[in-house]
Image (tube, rainbow, N blue to C red; front, top):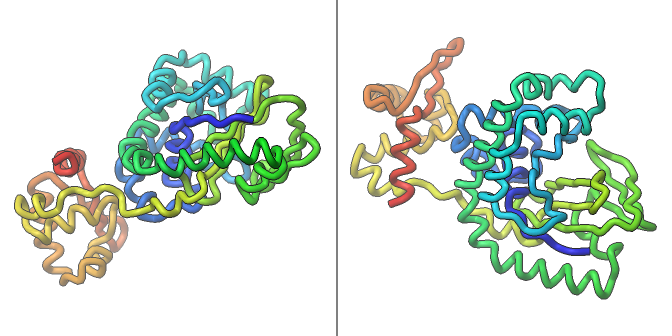
Amino acid sequence: MSLSISPHLTALALITDALAGRRRGLPGLWRDAIAARVGRPGHQAVRPLAAPGTSVGPDCLVPLTPARGDATVPEQLAALRDLPPGRLLADLEQAFGSGPLPVQWRSAAERPAAWLHGYASAISEAWDTAAPLWDNARALLDREIRRVGVAAVRGGPEALLGTLSPRLTYGGDRLLVSGADAGTHDLGERPIVLVPMLAGKDALILSLDDREAVWIAYPVPGAATLWRRPAAPARDELSALMGQVRADLLCAVARPKTMSMLAADMQIAPSSITYHCDRLRAARLITRERRGREVWVGRTHRAEELLELFRRT
C-alpha cells in the first residue's frame, strides 16, 4: 500500500459536485464559486458525469494514473491536451463495451476533441479557485502521509481502508463498495494506492480495473476545517470604482439570480435594484433575461475579467 499526492483528483471531485450535481458534501459557497468560474465549454463537458445511477467514466478523466506516482495539475492538463481524440473513443469502449454508448456520453463520442478541450478547461478553471485551499492543506496532507504509513505497518489494509469512506468495506482481498457502483471487487495481489483529496465528506473516486494497481481517492481527514469562503474580489477597491451597492450586486450574481432574489438578499427596494442593474448593464457587466414572469441577472465575461483583476490585486 502506498500514497499518492495527485491534486487533479481534487479538481475532478470538485467539478463533479459543483457542476454535475453529484452532491458529496461540498459547501454551497464553494459549489457556487466553482460553477461561476468554469466557462460554458467546461459545464458542457462535465454533463456526462451527472447521469443518475452510475459514475463510470473513461480512463482519460485521469490521464496520468496515481498508481505511477504523484502528478501536478499542470502535468495532468498537459497530458489531457496531448491526448488524441481516438483515445477518448477507445476509453469509452473499454468502459461501456462495444455496444451503443450510454446516452450521456454520445455527444462526447461525436465530438471527442471538443469534449477533451472542455473537460481540460473545467479542471483548469476549477483549480484556479481551489489552488489556495490546497496550499493551505499542507499540514493535513503531511499528517495523512504519516497516518497511512503507521496504519499500513500496524493494522494492515483492513484497519486503514475502513476509515476512508463509509461506502468502503475491505476484507479477504475483496473491496465492498456501496452506492451507485455497489458491488464486490476482487483486488487480488494488486498494490493499493491511496489518494487524499480536498473534497466533500462523501466524495469517492475509484479505479478498480487496472491490472497494475487499485487506486482510491478519498477526502483527507480534517478537510472540513479548511472550508472557508472562497477568495473574493477586494471589495473595498471594487467599491471605490463603482460604489458599494453595485460592487455587492456584481459579487452577488456569481450564479444568475432573479431581480426579486437580489432585492431580498441585499435588502434593497426592487426599484433601487432595477436602477443599479440598469447602470451595470450599460457598462456591459451584467445580462438580464426574462423567463416567464421573472427577470434573471447574470455576469458577463467582461465582469468576470474585471473581478479577476481585483482578485489579483
